[in-house]
Length: 375
Image (cartoon, rainbow, N blue to C red):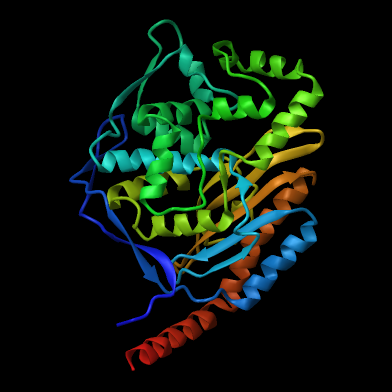
């Protein structure tokens, strides 16, 4: 019997199919939620040359950053500060979407389910959906549309409505725990989290962003300093970069959702319209990315939670989960983008120059390990 060396996830996945209706998005037919069981898997060490290259990139940035790269098929992770907690900001929308699709798999929700947004469903900052909420009847849409807007446009109103439809942030946290996904935080709606981090308490009129910003500007600097310090010390949306990449790798392997729900989530991530100058811009021709960005507020010359995480796929089909996270950065925007692009380019260069040889070495090592165990 083979020995076990690291904790992973094994799942039994039922068959699932796709249907499309005219406007509500894909309809999942015969879905079956994976039954997740914790089983140990051996994860080989990350390639030393890739690890060293990532460390050099982080060192050159001269500010704390978190970087993680997980090879989906072989499960190794190269990381810098990968086990430290960073604020996710809108990256946490991934886990809300995961929880919603889990509810779909269980039959507790459907993608075509009608949802009505009213004035009370307005959020803060980026919320294009809020412009459609007019009059007493509000705006009717579907769960799928909320998912699409949250993942492709990073719409806060769409994300917050999904959280409420699920029953609150605690439901998302429980879903992650059920799936054995440690090191990921969601906390609460964007409007509550962002309002508290600014030193305010949510009021319905803050759904008009200019009113929210005016109220924030009227606060004493000391109040904003204290609120932001409290947020950074214990961010409710905090997550570890390596936990994010391991979770995305598990999603790609089909271990977290039914096949149809997995396809929905990956395709929406591939349609992400934000952060085109981040990880995506560093990928050579022939590579693809399915990702989610996070961008927090600016205060006193620094930006909070500047992130990009996703799944990047090489021309030969090999896929890597990647996360680059900045807790609080004072670097100019071009420098931030250059770091993210450098991570993408470094991974692509490793794949081109060392990947095939490294994969062969890992396969030989795996065979040798299995032989030793069999003895």
